[in-house]
Amino acid sequence: MAVINIMENIIAEKLDLQLKDCNCCKCNDCKQDMLAYALNIIPPKYVNSAKGELFGRINSTKLQNSVDIDIAIAKAISIVSASPNHKN
Image (tube, rainbow, N blue to C red):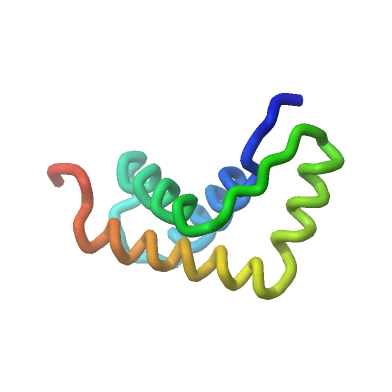
């Protein structure tokens, strides 16, 4: 397994869930901007094995980690929605 930042997948999944209840642009450009913004707030968690990925996912479900991720995503949605980087 290559070295990956498991936060990318975790944040992408949670972003999709939060966007379901959000009245904002959900185009691919905006979603990618939101993902990048949130990833720049949350410290990366690099792993290089399936066991490491599982441990990282379990650790991300701890209450404080989960709250930090949710807050970062909410900030990302708010910032990008207020000033989308596309012409629509």
